[in-house]
Each structure stands twice: as structure tokens, then as C-alpha cells.
View 1 (spheres, rainbow, N blue to C red):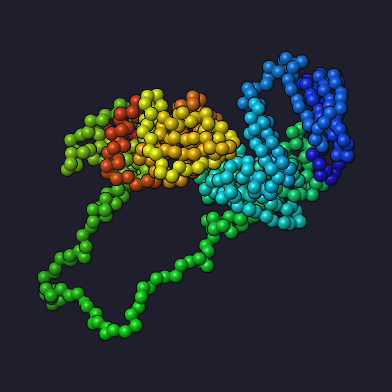
View 2 (view 1 turned 180 degrees about the vertical axis):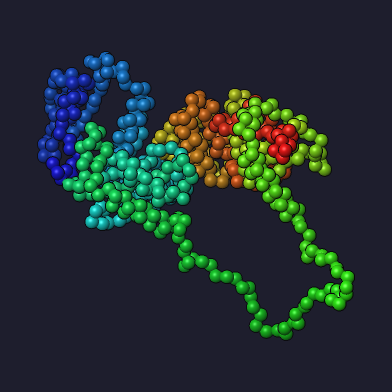
Length: 530
């Protein structure tokens, strides 16, 4: 009891299942020539005969809770129950790569996993892209032996689901150890993102307690603090080996300084010294110092933006609380004031590479460029899905995209919607698609990563927002393909964004619920200085 190496299965679950379902058991010993068939309905054995079957035991469980209608009513939808089965299936296959597994759903084979090593098993489960995303970890100590893989920081996702921690070949949930892994990547992944990891701990069974929860997924460790420290350092060491740690500098790979080609012969030239012939050091008249260079327009722009940044910070500190609420309710005036540039366009400029400042008739308006672009793209995509499809630009060389079975199933249900948005996808084998066309003007660089980000946003919206399929897809595309904060914009791009924003039906708020713009009236600005 104090040194368990098995899963602790004693067989009472079979009796419980047989009491509320139709069970069909086929079993045969290796040394036997023929097997046995046993059919049980509601704990009653209705048939027992000899049969031909493979070595081992095969269970078929049908009509769950057929004789307990009250319990049957508490079952969730087929998709929810299947996801529960899939979760348990993945927890088993990831810890037993030496065993072949198959999973069928509605007479369709979802997984066929041959015997392999651990890395290949992970790739077979989650898709071929993971072959380049996994970093190995390994550490041996007298407390625990750690092995497995962690995902590269740039592959962190917004949704949970790819965090697998095992102890003695048993899946567990341990927030304390999860914190250690996330802390090692704290400065390498964006906020509200979760790293992928497949980590296996080998611990003395006498130093853990697995009987603190009926599901056996919560485990208590005697030396959890030591394991935390070892796990933290092991993950950091793995990141450092692959030049991913922010605290590591590889001096061996520093390129030498290029001094150019030094001439070996030739007559050296006398140095040239620039002088001012009009300068008289003994003259009483002081000459005005002339600048050695004239500020470029770019320098002037930087100075102007720096001054506006100081003003904007002061506005945020001194702005009364009610002004923010009034800004939301203020009707946006799209008519530009008389203050325009030489070409007749309204004055706009960018601050912090995050916000666009536009002069309007009633004052100034500060626009969040990321939220504005999200609103613009969202309404464009919704219009395309409701009306005519977007023109498709055919690819000269179609690109193959590989996904996990869950993501592949999601894409299969969205093929027509993707086509309306300009993405021409075709099913090509299991969990693989061929991209034959992209939206006109779309950059097809790293389409695999972009499609995965779209799917991540789509799944995240399913959890946090109540959107139908089309709204969710439009929102996910807008979130993924929009201009991000920190992106510098040209004058033409800022003017175009402001014009497009005011054509939208809801220019005040983004599809994610974020405020797009804040208006400062001339009166508000004057009051700040009074």
C-alpha cells in the first residue's frame, strides 16, 4: 500500500458499469486457442459462448444508463461527453507510447497511433508542426527524475489544454508545479498565454499520496518544494540550451567586427581639415553660431511626438473621472475642423506607436489603433460572409497545412465560411488541408501559424463569448490579422483607418468590448490649464 506502482485498478468499476449498461466482453489468453464471449445486461449475464478473438480483453459498453432514466437525463450533449472521453484517451496515450491505440467516433477513425517514441507520439497526436516546437528536458536527482518536452515560448496559446504533467506514469493536476513551469517562461511568453508541456516525473511511490481525491488526479508530495526548484531550473536550462532564455548571451556565436579591407600599399594622403576663412578670433564682434546640420523632418516629427506624449500623460493625470464617461457618450463628429494640412487632409499623428490622435471639429480624438482595426475588419468580414464572397488569389504552389484532430474537425466545419473570406481550403488526407487560394492582397507568409492563431482565438471565444459560428470566425480573423499596438503607421494609413472607422456601425467599441476612442473637447483642454 505504501509503494504502489500500478494504477490501483481492482475491478469494482466493471460491476458498476455492468449494472447500468449493456456490456459485451471478448477475452482470450495467449496460450488458449479460442476465446470467450460474455454479454451482460443490467448485471444479468444473458449469454456466454466461445468465440474467435485476439489475445487480451475487449470491452464494448452500450446504452449507458438505459435502466436509470433519471441519471441518463444528466448526461451532457454528445460533443461534451466525447470531449471527456477524448481527454482521458490523450492522458493514456501520452504516457504509453510503446502501445498502439485507435479511437473511433461515430464509425469514423479519429486517431490511429502506432508504437513510437515519446516525441513521435506527441507529434502524431497534436500534428506535424509540433516536430519543430518541442524542446527536450531531462534531469536526474535523488528526489525525482524529470523527462519530457516543453513547447517553445513563441508557441504559447491563449487557451489551456496542452499542459500534461505525469508522475509515475499517472496524469496529475498540480498548480504548484504548473507555477514553476510558467515562472521559467515568465519573461518569454505574452500575458494571459499558457505554455505547452509534456513532463514526466519519476518519484519514489512511498513519498507521494495519490488517495486524496476520487479521480486520483491530485497528488500530495512530501518534497514538493525541492521538486519545484528542480523543475524550475530544469526548464530554464532547457530554454538556455536553445538560446531562448532572456538571461543568456552566447559569446561563441558573436560575429567578428568588420573593419573592411585595409590597403597594404599606396601613398598616404594628407588629412583634410575644414576651416572657416571668415572667422577672426581677435574680432570684438561675436558671430552667431551656425548649426552644423539642419533638423530633418523625421527629427522634427519625433520632437513633436515627444512633446505630445508629455501633454497626453498630463491629461491622463489631471482628467476628472466624469470626463471619461462623457467621452463614451459623446457623439463622434467626423467633420474635420478648419485646421488641415497643406493637402487639405485632417491633422492626424501617432503617439507611442499605439494611438492615433486626430483633430476633429469639437476638439481632439485619441484612437486605439488595434481596437479600431479590429472593429473595421470585423464588420468587413461579417459583410463578406453575409453577402458576396471575397476574391480569391490562387497560389502558384499550394501549401499543405497540418493540424491536430480537434482543430482539423473545427476547420472542416468552417470550410464554406473560410471560402467566403477568401481562404480556399481543401481536405487532403487525415488532419491535413491544402491551401489553394488566399484573400487578394493577403501576405501568405507563415500561413500555418496564422491559421493556428485564428483557431486559438476561435476556441477562446467559445469559452468567453456567446457568439454564433460566423460572428466568432469574423471576430477571430479580425483579432489575428489586425494591426497590433507598437506598429508604426504612415500618414496615409492613419487617414485611411480614421475614415474606415467612421463608416462602421459601432465605431465606439471593438468586438472584444474595448473602448476604441476618447474625445477631448476644446473646452476640456482649456479647463486643464485654468
